[in-house]
Amino acid sequence: MTNNKLNKCIIVNSLIYFLLAYHIVAFSANLFIIFIAKLIGFNAVLSYKGFILTEGNWTNDNIILVYFFGNLFSLIVSLFFLSRYYNINQTRARIKILYLWIYIISLSWFFGEIIVGAVVKTGVGAALIAFEVPLFLRLLLALIGISVLFFIGHKTRRDVLLSANLYYPLLSSRRVRNFFVNQILIPSIIGFAIIILLKLPNLNQYHYVDLFMLLSIGITIMGFFYRLYMLNGITFQNTGKNIARNECSISFLPIVILVILVLIIRIGLNNGISI
Image (cartoon, rainbow, N blue to C red; front, side, top):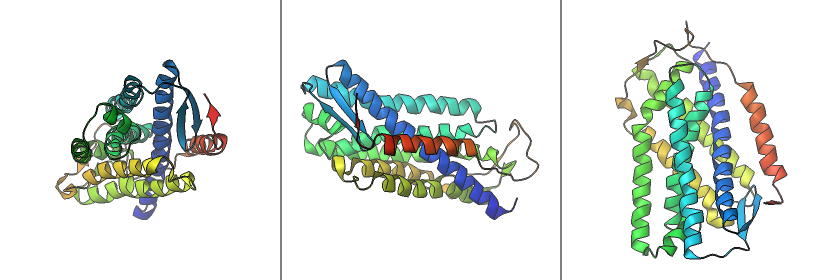
């Protein structure tokens, strides 16, 4: 396979799994918060734009329970899928790209909620206000969250590098940057654009939280590329299937699943449903 075709194949596969991971993380995080809210007496309307909670009693305890503990779900999801990724990182199962993206996005989601909540009065921000956290401490918390996301991205580059065994028998040091561009950077940029288009014309609802969450994912991705030139190449010995040459094929089943999922969320939830 020529380098150009290989690069395009890597980009398409990663883009599909990125979009799948984003919708899985965002949708499941919203559902979990709604689940907690329902337990304490709230009603909810879920739509592709997000969710609205009604008819409940917004005490400080309930605000903290719904938004602070509700956000912990994303952290638990990230750790679970990171462990799943470690279990299969030596094999050539493409599903591990989905695990990798869910880990990256859900962890970014957890800290992104904290960062966004530090500056707007929604989600975790409402919980911080309930705790009576002063503005300067909230801003400091936002800066810490940004630094943590960047640090996480920088420290998990090796995990991304391990996914190269899907396509290469070995990845030389001079090809590492090219692989990260194809596996991470280009798919995420295209994915951001597609997600924003799907959110239109309601991107400005909820204080542009959706846009800020994408920026949080972007901060993690920036960490991947910090001093990337120092990352050594890698030779794969146990791939589950020997690769005689650089090769790649498009995963069509995830494309079908993605299309169905997007249609359900964007069209099926266009007017919202009561839960």
